[in-house]
Every structure is written in C-alpha cells, then in structure tokens.
Amino acid sequence: MMSDQRAIPFVMMRGGTSRGPYMRRSDLPEDEDTLARVLIAMMGGGHPQNIDGLGGGTPVTTKTAMLSRSAEPGVDIDYFFAQVAVDRRAVDFAPTCGNILSGVGPAAVELGLVPATDGMMQLRIRLVNTGALADARFEVRDGAPVYGGTQRIDGVPGSAAPVALRFRDTIGSRTGSLLPTGNARDSIGGIEVTCIDVAMPMVIARAEDLGVTGYESRDELDGDTGFFARIEAIRREAGALMGLGDVADKVVPKFGIVAPPAGDGAAAARYFMPWKTHPTMAVTGSQCLASCLMLPGSVAEGIAALPEGAGRGGEPFVMRLEHPGGTIDVEMDCQVTNAGLDLRSAGIMRTARLLARGEVMVPASIWP
Image 1 (tube, rainbow, N blue to C red):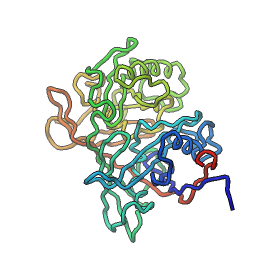
Image 2 (cartoon, rainbow, N blue to C red):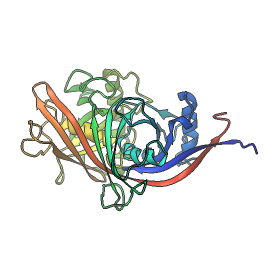
Image 3 (tube, one colour):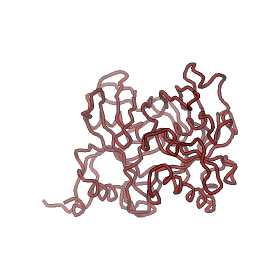
Image 4 (spheres, rainbow, N blue to C red):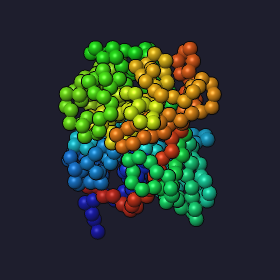
C-alpha cells in the first residue's frame, strides 16, 4: 500500500538536560537542504508548541543527533548535530551540543552502530560540526546500555547512570583560535566583552555591566526584552569581529554573563541560546565560560572563587558554575601561562536515558 508519509528509524533520548531523536546518518537525506526540511517536519519546527512534530516547544527539546561509524582512525562514531528552531522553519548546522553528546554513546549501541561490550564501555566521538573529539564512558550490561543509577544532575529530575565526557581539541572550535578578535577584551557598544572560542564561540560580559545581577531566574531574564535587545546588538557585532559573518539568523556565537558566586560555586553564570535563557547550562558553554574565568585579562578575570593553585600547573581541578537550575561541575586540566591559557582537556559528568524507539514519520512530499 502506498503511503504519503515516509518512516525514519530513530531512538528518542534525553541527553543531559536536552532531548531529541538520534538517528543513523545513512537513514537521512545527504544534501543539507532536503535534510533541513526533513528535520523541520520531524520536530514540528515553525510552531511555538511544535504541535506537528516531536519537539517540545523549547530549544532544548528541538535538538537532533545523526550518527555514523567514523572513517577516521582511532575514532568510533561521527556525531552530526542540528538545532531545529522552535517557532521558525529553520535549522542551524553550525553549532554542536554537549548535552545531546551525553546520549551519543548509548544511542550508538541502540542503533547498532557499535557492538555492545559488557562493562564500562568507552567510545571516541568526533563532533562533526566543530571537528573536536570527545571520549564518552558509560556502562553496558547484558548487551544493552544501563540507564538506571544514582548520578544526579541539576535540571533533570531523579537520578540515572553516569556518562563521563572528556573533551579534547576544543580551542578554536569554529574560528580556529582561542581569541578570534585577537584581544582578551573588546568594547562593543560601550560594554566590555571577551570573544572566546572553546567548544563553542561565545561573547561573554559581566552581568553588572548589562544592568543585571547574574543571579536572575530564567523567567526573569526572558521577560526582560530590553536586556535581550542589548545583548543581541552586541552579539551581532561580535560575530562579525570573530569572523563569523552576519549572525542575525545564526545561533553562534552564543552569549553568556558572569558574576561572583552566590553560593559555593566558582562563579554565577547565565547562558543564552541566544534568544532565550538556557534553563540550566550547556555543556559546551560551561567549558567556554570556565575557560574565560581562567583567562588572564578577560572580562571575567578576578570574578571566580577558585581552589588554591588552580591553573598553575598542578593537578586538574573542578570549577563549579552556578546556573538557573543549580550547578554544573567542569573538571579543568589547564595551565595559565604568560601567553594566555593552555587548556589540555575538560571533563563533565552527565546522564542519559532512552525514552522511545521506533519510526518517526515525515510527509513523503518533503523527501520523495
């Protein structure tokens, strides 16, 4: 029987504090224009509730992951990320997502892309969007990923099995350099910012310089239209200075603000996606913000409350960032040098859970 819909195999995963469908790249169109139309239909992009698709009406629930066996020596899985817009029919293939990365290892097993090995399984993953590498370590039992456990992360109810992520080669993820403008500080519209590229290109400012405290809730910030107008104007100019061109319709660079800690963290931080406040903290954003806090001469210099000797050539240390939903810990292996910052790696503990598996349907007219 002929159908006017086309079926695409998928597994629905929560990865960290985000969720979305994970699919084999080979089950999707090769050209990006058709792929974008398929992903928009799949997620219901262009409607504030994503009522005609799998999306959940927020940027953290309209994310997609496309996986394949890697042809690169020493790499197990290629992970291609796409961010589908909520209320616009648009897809951004430029950024990557560290929270969705949390589910890549288990999803690769679920999709049959790698053989399951009981015990603690480690995969090296290439983040196709940026070229960075990450190691994911998770448990497999009786041929299937383990999802139940005692690891808790702020922004997700309950607990689950841990997924340990360690990121490498993240400096200059899109721009090729730690400081794409060549400066630790730039002044844009009278506001001092640091334009920095670690895992995710970002524009970072001190909260107080933008007329906020940095301790506001997501709803408080999202309700401040004047604040978003200010940071968007800065972000667009910074994008051009960073060599990213016209970023008016792009989610990169992201914007972040920092303030002294309100609790037991190293600093308070808020991350923007970029037109909404992240409910917690992006994994990639946490690495970039932590690096900015360590960078001599940045707008964040002197803000962080750090362990004695942190970044002075000793052992890796944990930097705890306070966000709207709680905290996130970033294990930093770095050294502050006369030339700036030598970041060797950054580690994050996340969780993931399989939510559903099956076929997602898209109109056959979109992908004949």
